[in-house]
Image 1 (tube, rainbow, N blue to C red):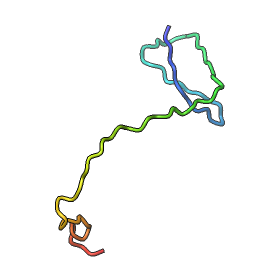
Image 2: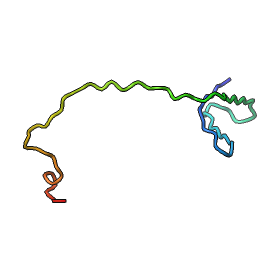
Image 3: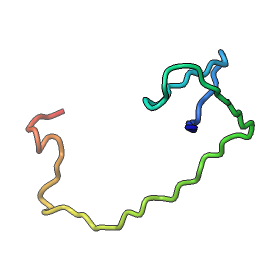
Image 4: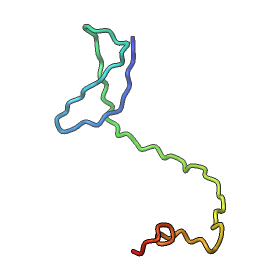
Length: 74
């Protein structure tokens, strides 16, 4: 017995199409569809732990403005 678990969005046409893994043999199978009526809650993900790293300009004379980089005036 193989179990395939997935989360899907049911559209207005109420149609569900399932792509089965390659290990499922061709032929007749007994299939059970369970619809959990409880709404899926969005899991609160914790913030990524980025460390603070002070990044400043190498020199105060370098501004990295477009005009300075490409020599054009906008």
